[in-house]
Each structure stands twice: as C-alpha cells, then as structure tokens.
Image 1 (cartoon, helix red, strand yellow):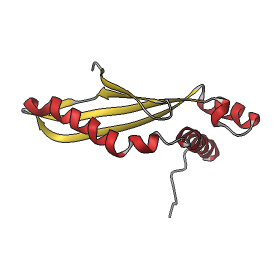
Image 2 (cartoon, rainbow, N blue to C red; image 1 turned 45 degrees about the horizontal axis):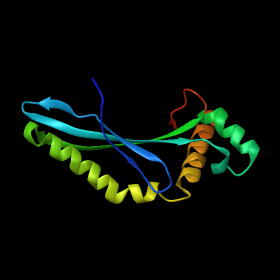
Image 3 (cartoon, rainbow, N blue to C red; image 1 turned 120 degrees about the vertical axis):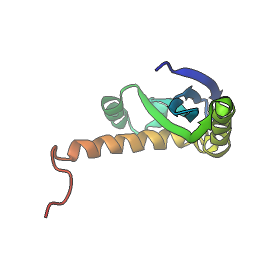
Length: 132
C-alpha cells in the first residue's frame, strides 16, 4: 500500500504534524477512511531536565520520539472518501492539535515514552498475567 501525505501543519511549539492517508477498501463500494497523524519530536537537551536523563532518553528512544494517532471512519462511500479524510484532519486540528502545541508537550511526551520503554524492560518475557 502506497502512503500519501495529505497535509503538513506546523503548530505553536514549532513541531510539525504530518497527515498520512491510510484509507483502505473493505467491502463493496465502502471504505475505511483513515488518516495517521504523525509528529516527530526531537530528543534534545532543551526538553530534558538533566544531561544524564538526556543520555538515557537517547539510548531508549533514539534521536526522535514518535507521536502517532490513527483517525478513522468506517463505511465511507468512495465518492465521500476525500471529504471524510479532510474532516478527520480538521477535527484533529481542532481538538488534539492545541494539546500537542502546548509548550511543555514535547517534554511530557518524551518522559512518557521513556517510562513506557523502562516498563517494557522490567517485564519478564513470556508472562502475560495472573494464572490460576
């Protein structure tokens, strides 16, 4: 499947959100209209409190933390696909983009991603939950 970038928007804290088409045909003349909102957040010292934490962030996340959210709507007719994708993007920009544009979002997101990675490292492989 070929991915097409539909739109790119720079938000208040100089981050850029890219909107990528992930739509697919699923039955008869119906589609799943899907758009992935992607924002790459550089793991830079300005977003990390201490130098040691910055090094840890780089070792766990690499140079960039990746925010991704799939926006979708099922049962869309082929004739309404483009309009529906645009509506999904506009709704995201109205509701979620202000949160992503907050000055402290990059720091909080990077910290959250670090904590996710640390929790994954603590888990024991092969154990999925309580056993009777």
